[in-house]
Length: 239
Image 1 (cartoon, rainbow, N blue to C red):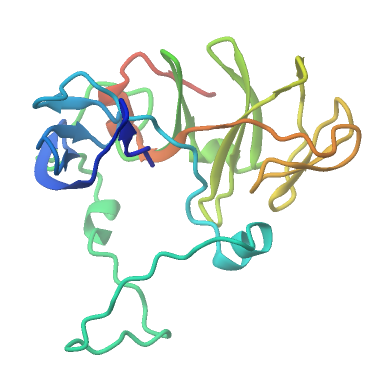
Image 2 (image 1 turned 180 degrees about the horizontal axis):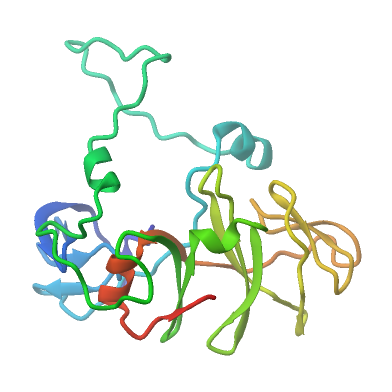
């Protein structure tokens, strides 16, 4: 997720149909510049070299959980084509990329890439802080859904729920103090440093010494290893 505002202008975007390093390129309607959807950087056109600001988000959280935490949320609705029958709610959602997800091949060409620290199609949580990059394999969250770690020299809390694929990465520093967190229970976690309980959807402390404070959320993405490593070859991998 990126901000559409750049240098005082607001841009609108579409899918170009082009690829760079086997990853989709967006284009903006105003200048027709091509943008990487992984880095947010303009790679060709009038705005080449510019970079969109990545915004933090939590993908694949259920509507029930989201609405409970964010009751004033507005919902994006799509106007239905009256000529097409409505999908029944009980119908399964068809994944048009299921064959690709189940294949060991990476990229459009099926090329195998050279960074063998992980399997090409292993899913990771990718995090970038300034010029430091870190990849957290999904399997790292099998025993517990939270990891206390550092990206570069910045203390972070990485959260990933294997069941829902919900992901969030926060700064662990509050009021100048680096906190250490226990394993999460659903979307709630307690830090052992102060005994404060935190909501992992909102980042807000709900009980304890730091009640009312908010963890700073960092941009993160769920992505295949080969795609992350191709764009950020200097990335480290959490072990």
